[in-house]
Length: 441
Ligand code: 5AD
Ligand code: SF4
Image (cartoon, rainbow, N blue to C red; front, side, top):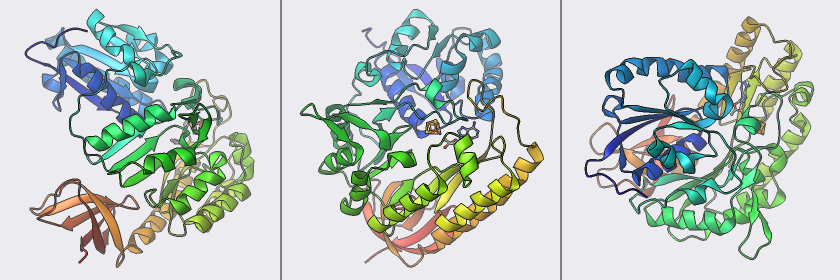
């Protein structure tokens, strides 16, 4: 342990991609805090720039190189500026990054973050090992500073599903579940620091199965119930889930546990059995629809969201229509849809691609349908009274912005309210990407 210098060094972190990266960036910032670094929002004044990258689609990965290109003048001006690449591109490309971009001082994969402070002390290096230990346990304990009211907590990492298009099993590695005791300790610590809503994270979060306090294995539903017992915690969410891991007990938790928010992100990727098979999803359209039915029986007001890939190798017009049909049958609150991007090292990489124009047209068509469903879902909130957790002041004086139970951003006139208040709001208006409402009497 080095003693922090009197004038703290400044660390700028840019986070790409998923919420897991947001969580990891926070943990790296805390770890670097014990090395005497404080976060800055201004890249130009940073002593160290850390890019926490995403490898899921080609565009995301290429973004790293254009951002590194833009850092060249800053590094030329201040050669002592440290530049680090973390995250999934670091894991996938390792030393190649430094070969392509010699200005990079260090490359650290997502499983090696606990060794970041030592690497920085050494002046750089490459670490993309998958250590056997829980990296989170080896990160310095965060200072007991106050936190924003909504926080992420990683409970599971990695994926054993090997969908044919996906890099995650290679970049994040095999599924690892953190033990109950550590998760509960972290959750209690967050609540003690002002957190009222926790989103449990994992690439396959509902596949979490960890060691319980008595040494026996717990499932994810039981973990949620245990976290719900923490006084002062009001809301629980989780993401991202695989349909095949929606255990009965987890579905039951949606029925029984009021702190579990009525919102579920459940990627389906395609509505064609042929394509689901080619994707190695290991479920069918029918099993997905039946699952949705059971979830809605347990929690009738639940809002469902999903991920879709269009233009997967071999996708025909009929397959695409089947996807539109599934979307029409489920009726999603919102969804992410992507054009298939071939990723080196994945099973689908070498397969003949759907013509780019065709895939573009399909994406547009799917997005138009999903947008209309999103609009309808938001519109259906108007007139309803919902819980809203205030996360920050709005642009106008006296205004607050928070998230509804269904994760919509809600703008409310509430001059007396404070960040962290959980209030009842009557929704009065739906805008394209947010709602407006007034405090309920
Ligand atoms: N091309 C396009 N989209 C992808 N996703 C994952 N891999 C790819 C790929 N190669 C999408 C999936 C996943 C989401 C996080 O990203 O829909 O659920
Ligand atoms: Fe990727 Fe499939 Fe694992 Fe999700 S379940 S992370 S899409 S391999």
